[in-house]
Length: 252
Image (cartoon, rainbow, N blue to C red):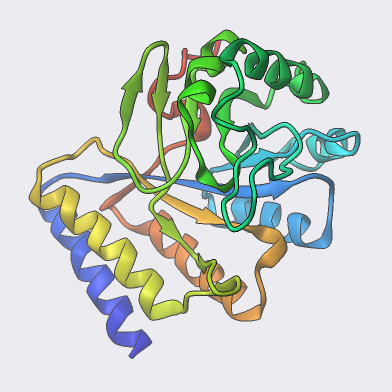
């Protein structure tokens, strides 16, 4: 079964190549707070596969440890919340309550981001914890200095002063408990995302891959190690570096 899923992905990529097109693909990994063995492995994989990565980092006193590790890798950094603590009653999750004023939210975002600001790898992208966006958060982000926001599942979308750029292929299912979705389902989801864009002739609409390095176990690592080099070698794919994501002011 996995072999058939790999073949079907390859066939879809060949269709893109035959049309003279390459689907823009990007990769986001969430929940970094410090250097761990898993993060070291992720950075090494990004470098070996020539797969650029947006690493979403939770502001913390240990976040500065990450920057020397990624110095020679094709990796950019985004702010991931303010502390990634849930402010809602379970089972719902969000970094901020919807009732909090946007001006206060902007102040909290800016204050928390102090531990990341000043590093050249940090981009003006906000990654929403639990991919939860509320109106007050969206309104606060430009005031806090962000140009883009990332969640899950949607097309590129413009808000006032802000661009939304989502991921679409999550390696995990989260209910009833976090677990790797498996090779076949991940490949199927990726292939369908590519196919939808091809049929719609949405050549510039990116497909986003989502991982969580702290939760990856052997099967998921093996899958990534097989997938990323395959995508990098495919003419039907064009990796977007984090700095090339839609809506960002070009870096000088």
